[in-house]
Length: 267
Image (cartoon, rainbow, N blue to C red; front, side):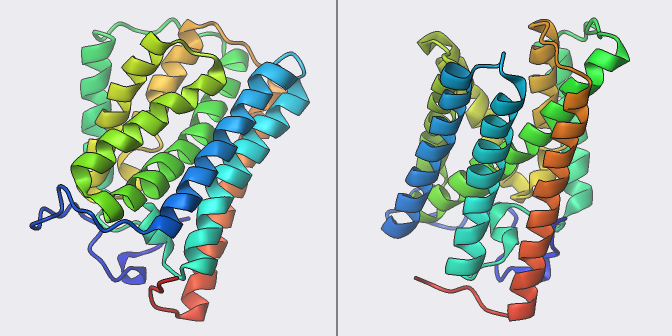
């Protein structure tokens, strides 16, 4: 799924060199593509939520999970970085470098979040037939969010503007993305700070393995359960297939980049 650190010419860990916290070296072409991908992802979510609506199950799934998350959310960043910019997928956070540290910290952060945000209360789990589709949704969409919001949007902003502006701007983009769910301002303000939390955690190792498959999807799963969302059991297969497709596409992109043996390029 993810590639080793040798695919990247940079240390994926967090760097605190002079100028890393704030800089002005914008790559406007990258910023244009990031902005376009944000618009497309938000538009797909908004279309699925307000035009198609969840009542039209299969069509909603196709627009939200396939078009929005898979094509625009994962495919577009991979296409730009690997084919156009000729950079490794490690530069999207898809790396196993320091995986023991990433997974260990993820377990620690997930535990802290659970006992601080939910006070250690056990969530009233639905029956397995209702729970499994929600788990599959949280895992698939959680993977998309980890790659798109942290590996793609955040890291491109860090390269152009430094850590502090990138965390703030990236979190603002993450919060306003939820306008697609028709959330109000107060909810988006809360999500802005959630975005800051995930961004700071991600930058410790710059690997999606510090967020996924537990830390980031956990919050979404708890919300889905508390909102009493119900999905047909068949949705387990659908979201499971979406996750498999995402992983396979990322793997093939990494193999393609390795075969080309191309160094990091500049458009």
